[in-house]
Length: 373
Image 1 (cartoon, helix red, strand yellow):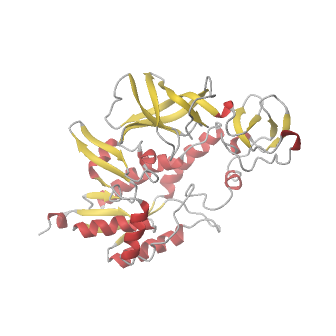
Image 2 (cartoon, helix red, strand yellow):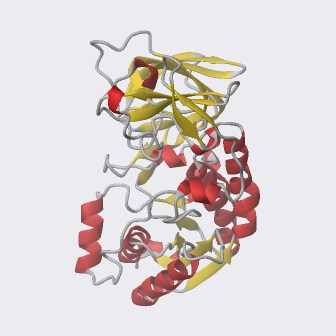
Image 3 (tube, helix red, strand yellow):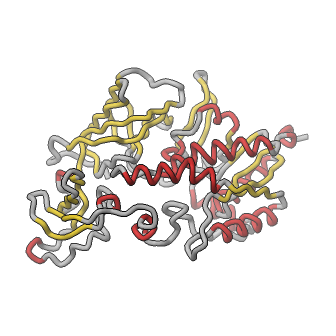
């Protein structure tokens, strides 16, 4: 008899192929599997896909022959995730609500709800891994480097790790779709969700304007030449190329323009021509609100690698801790380091933890130095 048959695993079922295959693999291993679908955002417009996602989750669970629970965390999401999202934009930063959603909702409220439903373990379709080590449970990168989602999971409560399963952690995305197709899952070719869940396919600025009003101002080159007008600094992020409204500047040539800085005091958006412009590269950052899976950092000063955005290649760095947070010096310049995003630290495949980026320092020099995208 399979000992796992006495273990109830509740799988977060989004309606997509990843969570469907996660549930399928757990069934194959002999677990007693149930599904749980969360509704985290409700809106009465053409962009909200909550109803379609719920129907897709029902179809998946019916196909797998497992029960589906449905819980609405829209109120909790607005209070714990969306309110901070707006506050960060209001303060001139660019937040990453997926990190807060994982910490507060998926591996917070939802995990506790699954426990009340009788779950021994919870599982999701994230591309990550957990492992028990001599020094405690650790979060590891997913084996598919292109899909690894440990960046978004770095802030969850370490005490949740013993209760969590990531069935896709050893797989790559192509294999997941192959399994779904081979086993006849109806959503094997369903498009991956992208971007921020509550915005959907709508234009981002249009969405944000429903909640926050920006103050228009000048767009300047690094030399101080005015070349356009912006709609409000909060609608732009560092490294942004599209939607600047400054095309056709024949005197400056054909090279694209990128958001390089925000001068909050003057309400000026500074744009630089060419991705290689020095203003777009940083040599160091400061981070706060640090969280560590071991409960504490490796040391007051240590070397590791860091990501400052999802899918960025790991960059070697040196971390110096202080009561205010962390000073992080890169071994090579990093492009478009953005306050409000997260610096996530790694030792090989082990996610050490991370914190929110509060500031970035320009690289002392970029010429002749290998850069990180």
